[in-house]
Length: 556
Image (cartoon, rainbow, N blue to C red; front, side, top):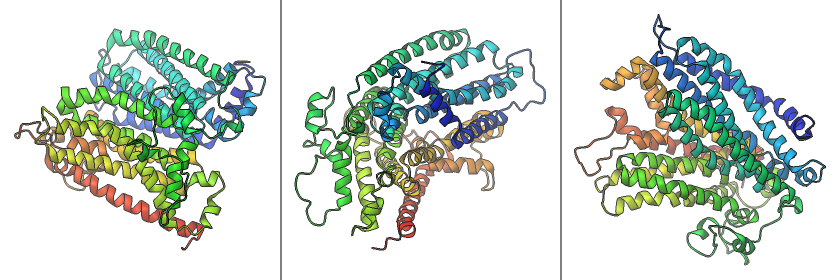
């Protein structure tokens, strides 16, 4: 019932493995790993296989780290909608009413999500086998690393399934899953990159699998118990939450709609008539959507972000002030995770509720529809981001005034974060206009943001690590022409707020101290980032308005 004759597992496997997305993702995954190995392959014409080449060791470590990061990013996309998807399809109560045990349901959902990831990992074995003759890794390290990745993927998948059981929407489960998984992924990357030899072999091959499996079993039991006595049964798991009752029963932080700043992102339900001139779309989005589903997701997002911000703030802003760009990158990452949640489903939700045609037949203009949905999503995203941005302002204002000569840099940090918030919201809404399903819109938004923010920086770091020519140019600060691939690779990082944050100068009280980089690019990276995203946001807004007129023929 749990494995061999589990109907949930059989059904999920048939559906997942027959989807076109499965084959496309497999092709992209293997092609990306193959390109990385090909580009980083040692350039020596003759290799000494009797010793452990340093370049081959770095290549293997990069391969495993890249695979681990890709798995961490893909696990929520497969597992976060396992149970929440049943609630959205209105089959949740039917599943719980079946004779299946709750443990069999949870285990079937988990294994079905992990099987596809197992196929991806298994298909990458031929690539790593090509690296074994280089002497960069032993077969025991390969086996231990794959065991560690399998254990981490199991734990991450169980975290996603547990989050999926708590929320009625896949989007909420996806965001909470990412906020829990990404810090764990960062810890794993730091540990793997900073250790080596027998100590790393013992940890990833023995201690790590035991800890991950223990955590997964604990979450499995808790989720099964929740499905055995489900608190969200009735009204197809879509019953409206009473804010007053939820505040009384809430554990930890409580959102008060009548207090500042809670009322900025979670205002109370309207109990009076709207005033003349108020945008009805904005008022509806701000008041009904959040409290109609409860505030559990918002409370978890705020608490998790603040919990992670406290140690980062202490280390990056006070103990090591030169690490201030790292804290800014954390703010950017938080906004990238949270921003699309409140905008990627703004139009697709109308599709799914079959209310879009009704909305378009009203006297509300397309600009009012777009602006109302955009401003409501942007307002929530900015307020949540401000919760973790204010420590940076306090570090600038309060003693010992380490950043007193860096006022312009702090101001540019604010501009970078503000433009990132605007772009994530605008891009999410743009994908919501293009697609008809919220899940597709959400994944497309995250994919584009990953290409814009992370891919150029990763390519630049990879080129510096494995390209002798690029390493020589950077070390000697040699300028190249506009037709050089080095120049184009350098300017491609203008799309990343991470690169823009690190390009800004930090004097830290010493006016003789300059920016960490040098040359024309590092002096103008932030300006190039600002110009690029101002143009991009203007293009997205104008295109969305044109699509409203073109696709649905609305001419108010």
